[in-house]
Image 1 (spheres, helix red, strand yellow):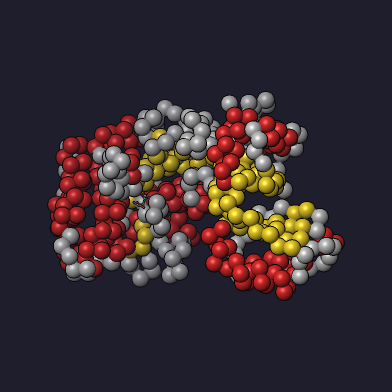
Image 2 (cartoon, rainbow, N blue to C red):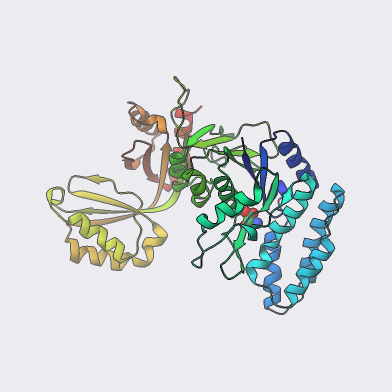
Length: 437
Ligand code: ASP
């Protein structure tokens, strides 16, 4: 059994957090591969080390002294080391880094150092081996991760040992350091889990898993205990703040379950995401989560005879493509189609797009409605089950919420409703109360 763990910035913020991590790792001998972020915020107004490093780089560029910012970074890591009684020679590390900074360091190398220092300290603290990300996480020239080269390299380095790996960066073919996108340590953790065929990828953060609805709208929403990767995709596409798509890709590809956990509440089981589940009979809820987003526009195109005509749909879609307006959803009626698009993508092209539609599609009418919110109820258990949509529409109707658009995914994994933005929060609350409470 092997568990790969990733600890985010708030889990790495100070010595107390390091202690929690050590307890978590020591409580289970299969927790042998630990990927870490740079130190994050200890309190809401605090600085993230990675942000400070970006700021240092900006100072270098403008030829302004970076001493005071660099001092903050040094101080944070030195404090963690001293409070934990560790011996890592940070002084030499910082001196070497300063020298590089004065001689022209790349931005990516500089901002990767937060993860590097975190991993050095955590490796000593856990008594695990430090494996630098440059020794195994290899990029191709186009910036994509070369899994064929990286995976065997990590396997050869880890063997059966306990290891700590810095997240967020790797090596380019020309030997230069390259970083992933912000928040990229999640991706490093997933890649490490996939490389080592881990039994589970535990992503440790400061929340106890994914919530069933936005806590700013619903009071104390319940945690999603289990979700499939498809549901996770639907929820994040629909607006839920969950892990980035790129994060789950390497583990999903290998069918490795992902467990989102809370470093500050380690006994909470969090959310378990996997390709499929053995469903419990009579499971209490058949909605997994509710998510939504505002700022959509609906472009409604009517044309007599469109339903039976050949090629109209293609012509419409082509106009959207030519105008680089992405289409999110397409509910249709007889001789009428609506295309739901993000308003910010539509606005700059509105006149050109409607003009093109008029000449190329010759519709009877084109109507554009702004200020639409789309709310999605997502649940694998909705499929083949009568009554879900009825319940949704009844609940919204009872609260006097007018539904502007309805769409059900063909896989029956989600039901989407478009409402006026003023009804957005109420829609989420009504659905939560109807299905979860
Ligand atoms: N430290 C990096 C960031 O702040 C990467 C990470 O924490 O995942 O974006």
